Image (spheres, rainbow, N blue to C red):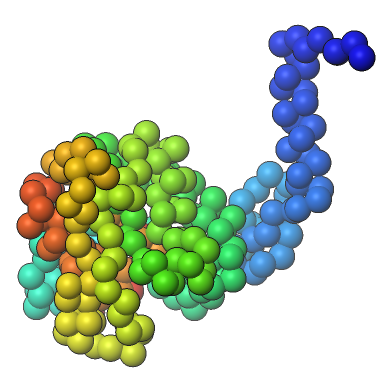
Length: 255
């Protein structure tokens, strides 16, 4: 059989044809309504964007939650509770549309929805992330039992997409989850932190990471009271990480 030679024009054409075929067979779904996205090539329905609530200034200078006015430096949570991490930010307020979308990602294998959220985070956050000069993106880990059941870690899926945008490598071996904890949603802030005590640790096997990075960005899907990010930050700081930041898709409303 004679092979058909490929030239410089053929390769882009074949790639475009393959993308077109994939879109026809598996059309992209909107992360908000779940319907087929139109126009083709978009990551979200134009009308559904308005159902999401982008975080707007002014915000808490520590966690990035919206606050009432520019005279407020820290939200009530950050005023009451010590934060080990340096600062962080989120893309969206955690309203009903965002809650539904995040649940679909986490529990219904709608990982493709993260394409939109990662792209939006790239647009909104890149300038500040560059200032942070982090050596690695560290996804908040899930317990191995949950990982086996779910098949993936949504925080890692998000971190991989952000890595392509920011050019910062993903380090998903540095931080591990050592204890399976009770669900956080029914607990108050203090109970959440207590629930997470000793839930995370840093790998001691030098072959796993080579060295402790000086600066990292923790990546998670949702920041509510900050208990998870705080628990992760404490073990990273104790291991020698000097600067710790975080990014998330959603954040609870300021108090």
